[in-house]
Length: 437
Image 1 (spheres, rainbow, N blue to C red):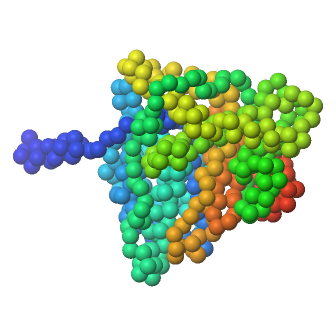
Image 2: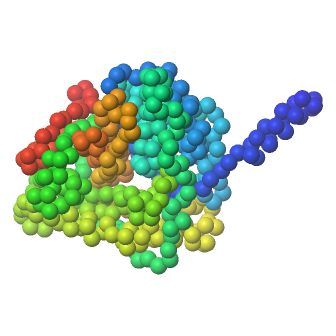
Image 3: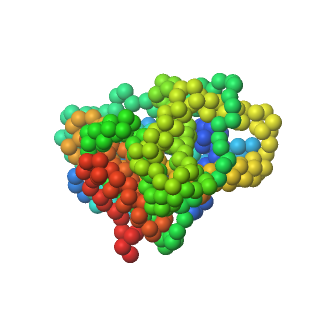
């Protein structure tokens, strides 16, 4: 072996040894196990700008901000006992024009080993993230900085007003807030009772139907106030009611409608992590009699959510999840066995959920960028047993509720928006082309 070749090999070995690595957070451990091409565990957060996207500038924007986001600059590796993250030193993923349905599987071998991708279509930028990497809060932080950087490149005059590579005051924290805030002592938190599953004729393989509903936040506040509930309770309750009216046809059911509602834990623990940090609660409605009014369903759902979304219960959920990870017996079990067991447990729990509705909250951009941005919205991919989901976010006084579904029937979506409109809320509807092909 020549000295030069030997030196090159030593350099490669040293570089590999110096690569940073990180554990998956508690929630993230599940996603690599259950991810498939049909159930991808990829979510999309999109932003619509006022002018069409320049691909070259968008690529440059990613190239500039990615070095600052160590959480997103990782690749997934398989260890003996757990999956783990390893620093990814490859070039940033290539920006492409949108070429697949929202939340499509991320083939890491064709994506420079990254677990996120960025696409665009006309005026829209899409950030799609494999959930093992970060939740919606982490995703929106990354997307906002990407938008800022892109707009600075697109409109150089903005550099006079904002020269930051990353906004001052933005936390790039990558702590595992689950482990940090874990407390011993908890009870069983998950139910295994079977729930209603939304079935029906499906769209063609590889297609997903998307329907956006745009609604003024102030009008929604007024509508929710009439029933004494929050906007989130109102929207989840309307979703459950729509399933009851259109899927169950207003009839009694032996199994409940159970809607999963992720809750951001950061405000409860003063956390700023970019990693996952949320807990699942469940809005459950049991149609036991012949007919329920909208107000009755809403009251049941709101009460159920209010009772679960408390600091005590959320801590109980979090501690239960982390305790399994900390169990020294489970930690010593090889990953191949863990994978088998986790898939079986997930398969049982998946049958206990009808759908998911997630709210990533109000999105705020700093000045002077607001005038270049029209909308944000979040689109969820499908999960086992869940053929329809809802994503919520708001921006500049407009709330967007996005339905994603692989079912052809649109009756639940129609009932949802019609119910809200009857409460005096102006609704503007937009959909993708999946329903018209």
